[in-house]
Image (cartoon, rainbow, N blue to C red; front, top):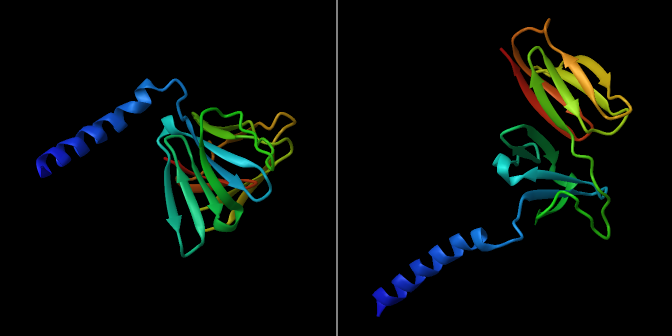
Length: 164
């Protein structure tokens, strides 16, 4: 009898693991909802990893493309969503910014217009300040920078970049 129950449990696990393949509505985003009603969506295809830093009271969200650091107090809830066009009764659509490495430059796209962008050294010293253009885009040229780790902060989003 115990073998039948064990076999049934294993069969049920296999069935549950294969269910997403048969669903037409597939979960594609992990969404963090902020206190101001905005949200940050992380695509599941980018393999998000959420780390908790209890000492600094922060959530560190790492994906294949970027790393975002958020304060505990800023994140009110989280959800899994099928599409990026997320709406809620008490929330407004968030602008999902991104960063790309292009040779000796980093290109920030899809942020709020006139957003403050600050670049810090790993020691915490402010290196440079920028403002995104009217479309929320910015190119940061890094040709003259020393090798090392830098932190780019755009409003509530933080990126760590390595110059080799």
